[in-house]
Length: 450
Image (cartoon, rainbow, N blue to C red):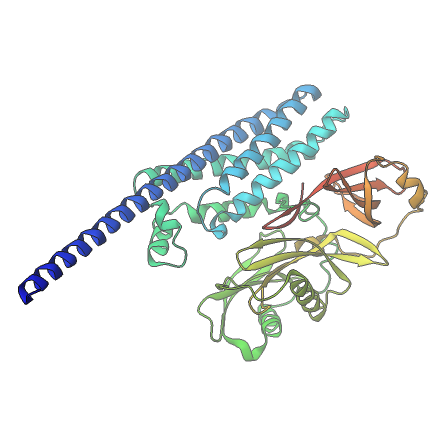
């Protein structure tokens, strides 16, 4: 074979390779484009359903404020419960950073739980109190604002100010620009602050805040003293700078709000120090956690040791939720074997190195106090007799649970299974009545109860 023939064959081979590469690239491009279109359609459908169900929730809440007939009120409130749950389902189907819409998720959870509790009162032929109607009014007022915010967001989405594909690129320039372009994001969290007393996001986690914060003890402190509390919390050697953002005078718990620049970290942490007593109300440090190196059990212990170091002793882990490589653990106060669910603290833990990235103490500061327990008239054996006989008991104990009416009940707590489903059943220690039943869901995102 002469040199010219070889060169000709080589040229043909190169052309074929180029043609194949172009074909593969063309196919991959159109495949990716089709997938992107499919994803965009999915996000549009989820967002459209979210808006529709949010509009329904607003209308139903408006009806519930004026309904006096117990039967009709129960029906309306049950519809609120259903549609707020459906709105929450579709909220989880859109690719927005949970920080921007976390308050919306909390609000929908609260609407669901509170409307369900009021419907139960109606079913028992108990009249709704003036306070119940005031709470419904507050929930409706925010639902109107949230409805308007979502409608505005819908306009900005369809006007092209933001694209779903950009919102999927977390920590990218496109994502940052997309978020900056959407002015309504800032409205969602700020508007909800005035309704924080009704926020609820899980079984016995954030029940309605009490007017008297029995766990918030101590003298009022100054800004300078609050600044020292911040330095003690993070450690002087880890802090680069501290800045006071504002004094939250009208918050449920008046507090000094600080931004903290930590050494060797790009993002700033935020921390709120209560004016009364200098307690840490909330801390958030939203750094990126790129990998998971520890188990849930290790994270539980890290959180418990952290709380002990900060003066919160005898705390027991209950439920947890996991997002990415960060886990949020609910810790309840435990007294002589009694789990006190109202005295709750949430701790957010990074699973790469165990760093504490967040803390919320609202439940504890609202409820923690010395309690006098009444006479337990029912024995554990007698309480078992009030259980469904099909329940296979796995664990049993005593717990204090909150009610929708700002009271507490001492109950026997039974964890068990029926047909491979796990449940928590609460039997009143005094009357033997079944106070509550929760379904335990083991999901990829954590252990939840409904």
